[in-house]
Amino acid sequence: MNADAKVLSKAQVAIFRASEAPDLGGETMPLGRMRPADERGRIAALEVGMADSAVIRLLFKDDDRGVSLTYAWFKKHATLPRHSHSADCLYYVVSGSLKFGSEELSAGDSFLVPADTLYSYEVGPDGLEVLEFRTATEFDISFSGTDASWAKLIDNLKVQQAAWASLVPPLAARKMMSRATD
Image 1: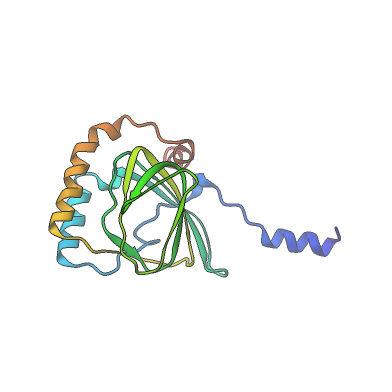
Image 2: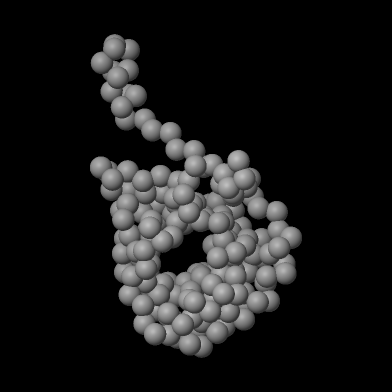
């Protein structure tokens, strides 16, 4: 390999450490459209522990190439509120399972959600680890629930809280969570 090839290869390679991955939220995934029911439901869900239902980290983003990669570990029986993102997203199930509409997906399965498409899913009894590949580095989250759908999600959060407290996170999630204590 000549010297020019070595320089070119180094310029194209980038390392991203899980322990340095920022939370996905707020600055990295701002809120989009919010209807009154969604604003009420989101606030109430956060008050009863919705943030405790998952570990979500932005592993990688490349503004020049317009791609990003997110890791998410959802605790068993978590439910995602009906929402959309302003970018296409390809999900790859690393471990666990989910119910997406009438479909059951497990490790090795994947699904594509086009930008601005509303969706939700329910996590299975063993939790869920997913990788989320997006065709953008800047994207938002918009909710589209009803008072009834938010109430159901909040009831589930209340029921699951005790079980979630004793869960041992998967290795990848533990590595990402450890940055807070290092």
